[in-house]
Amino acid sequence: MLRKIGRGGRTISGRLVRAPRKGSVIVIEFSDGMHEYVTTPVRRVLKLAGGEIFYIETMNSRYRLEVRTRELPLDEVMGGSVTT
Image (cartoon, rainbow, N blue to C red):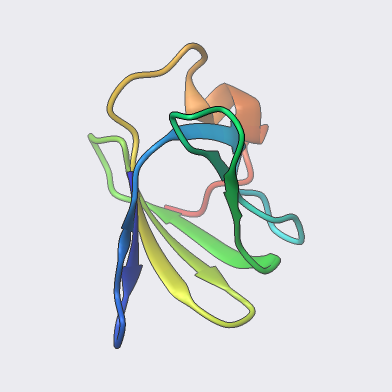
């Protein structure tokens, strides 16, 4: 679940297609399998210790990403680019 922080904050639920990495976009696929939500390029990724909650700053916005179920551990996908 991706939640935009700030004015006009909205919640996007779906499958995380592209992991948050500095310089790349985040892609969330909606449950219909035909639509996606794509952010602007990521500037910074912060992970809360002991949980699957990430705070992400993109070029234009800030987000809170909560990973509820997953196929691969997000830390492995991100290749160690998480700042704690």
